[in-house]
Length: 103
Image 1 (cartoon, rainbow, N blue to C red):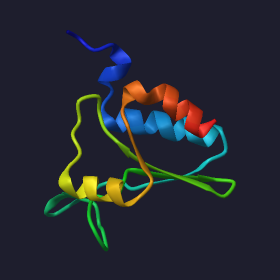
Image 2: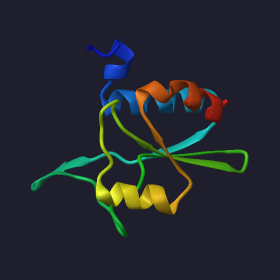
Image 3: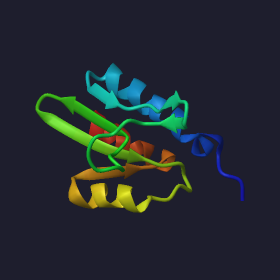
Image 4: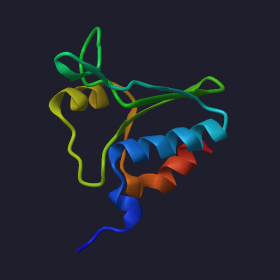
């Protein structure tokens, strides 16, 4: 079975779509990107690894979201953050929920 096109987004495409949607509705957005170093791709982190992909804030409300492709799996360090926070795990098929949360 082939997934519909919008469900086959890469995580980067999915994240960009959420960022654009959130900013259009007045949310502040924080996202970190990896950078190339002499040791390959790295995301500098101080503290515990696995922090969620997006932090969105608007009018005293904060939304934390870990993003996955439709078939993506949480890594153990990501699971720890999801369990420790009020964090959404969003996939492309969750778009109706994303719209509801960010309306």
